[in-house]
Image (cartoon, rainbow, N blue to C red; front, top):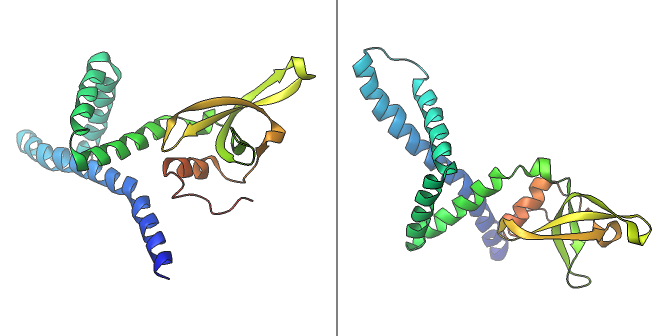
Length: 195
């Protein structure tokens, strides 16, 4: 009974991490922009404009995206990452946040066709993979091979591509989101059965 309670308590805590991180980022930006800057701007203009704080927040995200996309911005973020890896608690939080943002930046629903289990490396050992397309093998009677991306947990942006026959895969009945959650959480969160 205690082991069951402990298991699902930990799962619940891990499921909350991305929500809490997102909440703190938005809260920090909201307090910094909407309450402090907007209070000063309202006094300067003399008129309160509803929704201006949200608009400024979106503009701030836009400019942050531009900065992060150019060479100078990448160097700044690389420096920040090097600094955060030296601070124990911040290192863990930053890495979780980075993995989440990297995963969300990959348009997996457009790139991945479906989630599969692949008989990979060792017979009888199944690995989660994502079908990205097909190729025709003309040397083997024009057999169709699946292009399957196998991510490395817990960072789904690193991995390997394998070409396998359909018979070397299993359909677990999982959505791409369910399979991705399993990869990111190193198997802690995700489906409990194969359909």
